[in-house]
Image (cartoon, rainbow, N blue to C red):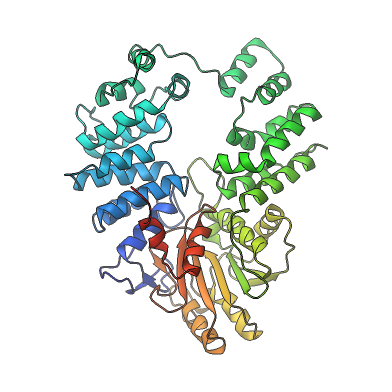
Length: 498
């Protein structure tokens, strides 16, 4: 992996395929590494390598930027693990004010994140040795968040892990805000928290008692015990349990309710994962659920600003082998390709004058209807164009057909090369083709959506009309809006109030 040592970010490097590329400035590099990471193995980089890069980059940028990036990753990009890494790594090199405690109090939004932060803190400081002392600012931040959770929320995540909730209480020494909360703290200390009646617990109990699963699922739905994420993950189970049509109608109403969608803060690709999981389910109920998923992701795109008929857009989707092999986390089947396709189809729906292509070893054009975001993404997911990442073919197609567009939007892992010229000897590059295209149509702009964060891009971000955006959430389109207003991607992060 090549890092940029200059402050501005225009160093020529080689990407993972040996093709010409450009490094990013430390801020851009950290931003990309963070918002494209669930700290899971990627095609070109494993989790330990990504952690090492993030740790190194934290030491190269302003502490306030790192803190704001942690908050941005948690609140805007819906990531949980990597904001914890940023806060702990920042605490190692920064002191003298309340920045760390303020950051910790913002990024810890679930009770189990208290113990996750302490587990990472312990591992990075002492390895397997047990913690007996905390950074004062880490302690202060965690003490404040102990006051945010109910007994149910603590009990739900009271797990037998490396760092237990009881350990956290004794390490942090939070002050209760009233007598009721002190009772909760006492229960944590004595390991006497109530057993939470979660949907997992109810299913386990039903299995032991022999109660019919269909009845249990129906009760969970009717009683509102299945949260939005749980619904998404269990749609197949609900249909295969043969729940009643009335109950399934309740499920579909919740799935497609715009307010529920926005509250759930789901990654867009989770809708595609649920959609594709149902493709093999033989049931007359399946189509109703697929429609609900389309409505749900349609609702998630409501706040995205697209472009009118006066602005022509070309969307180029990377469906290469590296995009198809890397998953978003060790426990997920969702591939980086899925992420890119859903984001691309969200944008496709919002743009009035738009066309879409996909590239790998070969390039293909696809005239897609605007209605089905998930149907379009699923259709492109099944397209086979080889394994290589010949991104230049997308721009070359525009040149050869003399097609003028105002904006080129490329969704990719940025590891572009030319397999037709031999391994590691890329002669035809995206940069070459783009420069030729700009001679033909000088008003055109290029937007690179980086979905992997490997630390380099196919074009320099210093070039006029070349823009860099990264992340997996639909919030990346807020960055696109900022770019349209003449701001930078980093400005979105720097404007966070902390």
